[in-house]
Length: 180
Image (cartoon, rainbow, N blue to C red; front, side):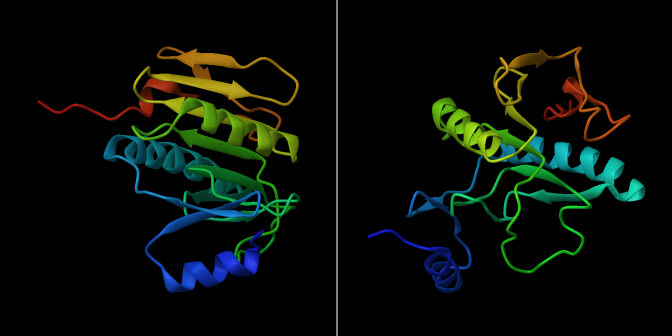
């Protein structure tokens, strides 16, 4: 039996504390991520939002924002950006739009294979840039449709000039700090 967006919404109402995605007609329940991966995602979201909001370039969302994709899947990247012209008003519901930029932050329980498949799905449906962030290796893999991934590491800077002119994200600035 293939489930629908309505089925997902019903399940989400019954279990509001669970994060879920609809993938190929199946509801996937996602466990909370480890602290480190969420801290890294929060750092990315903060830096992205601090650039986007004052310039009114679009919307930045975290891992609970669901996107209804053209293939009927409902997916939620760890961080996302949608251009203002594509999403003029926010919604309390899932939005029927493909984000322009997504980030997936690998947690202890994630497999790189499934994250790369999710990234590929977003790219094939219209996401311009998708980034796989791995706190364990301190790397970012930057993906664009039909191009080889570019691997960034400490000392490198992520830029996306076609979407966010002037924005820069120093790779080493997103990792969890250590306090003595």
